[in-house]
Amino acid sequence: MILKPPRPLGEKSKTEKTPIINKIASTPVVKKERKKISLNLTFLQNFKYKHLITPILIGIAMVASLSFLIYQLTLLPTKDAKRISDTFLTRIEKGDIQGAYQLTTASYKSINTLKEFRSALEDFEPIDLSKKKVTKRNLVTVKDMSKSAIIMYKQDNYEIEVILFIEEDDWEVLSFKVLPL
Image (cartoon, rainbow, N blue to C red):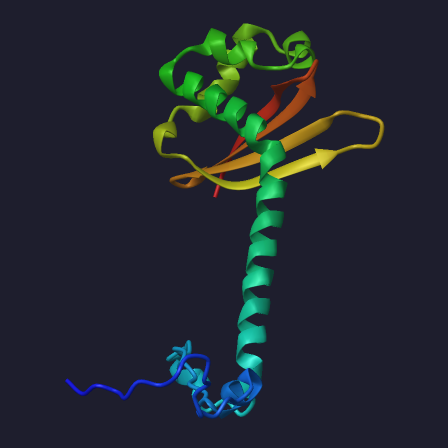
């Protein structure tokens, strides 16, 4: 251990004092390297305007999400109508003719009796309704009238069209028909 010689009290050392600003300016700047996000998309590697890639991808994502939102908004109004239509066809499939007849509108019931309704269901005999698929949903609003919905199903070589109408805040079946393809 090396000892320093003693100095008299009150005497200042002869070290250089530099202002803090000079010390900050003289320290070396060390930058941290950040990991760059790189998209390894082969079709974009030879793209001339690489600065446009990110805005283009953001635009594509926005258009896709907007189109999905519009698609969902157009299907939501027909959700209840589709539920009633599915219930109607399920009751026909199970042989609950009276239950299916109860889902029709009052105007349909005034025109067609239960016996006529049974004879109209003879078109459904060759169709296996358990495997039906929805092919089309439309919501139609007529001026100064209620809304109506048209739901199309496809099964085997048949197309089933169910037209529903809102009566007293509930969807009810207005008409139905089976069309061969």
